Image 1 (tube, rainbow, N blue to C red):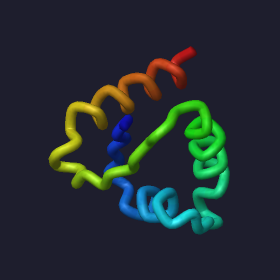
Image 2 (cartoon, rainbow, N blue to C red; image 1 turned 180 degrees about the horizontal axis):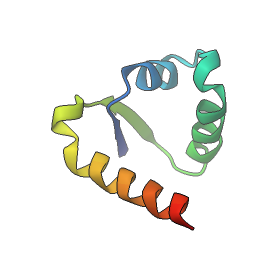
Image 3 (cartoon, helix red, strand yellow; image 1 turned 90 degrees about the vertical axis):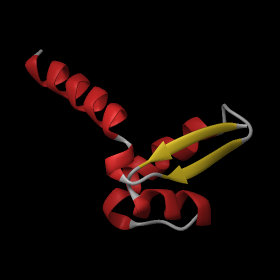
Image 4 (cartoon, rainbow, N blue to C red; image 1 turned 135 degrees about the horizontal axis):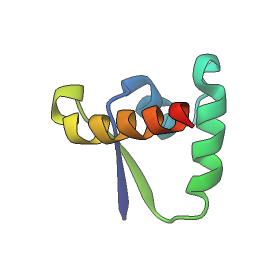
Length: 68
């Protein structure tokens, strides 16, 4: 099983329950579409303080995209 971690409790809850959250509907749709390519997947909430390395990598990637 592939485990995907997120520090967004709203996102993880929506993915686990299958419910839509209008504010992140586009993100949920993208994740759900991509998730069909990988089986099985589990979505796990991780507090931001325990997710510093991933958060740092994501921010660096976004900064590079914005700079282009």
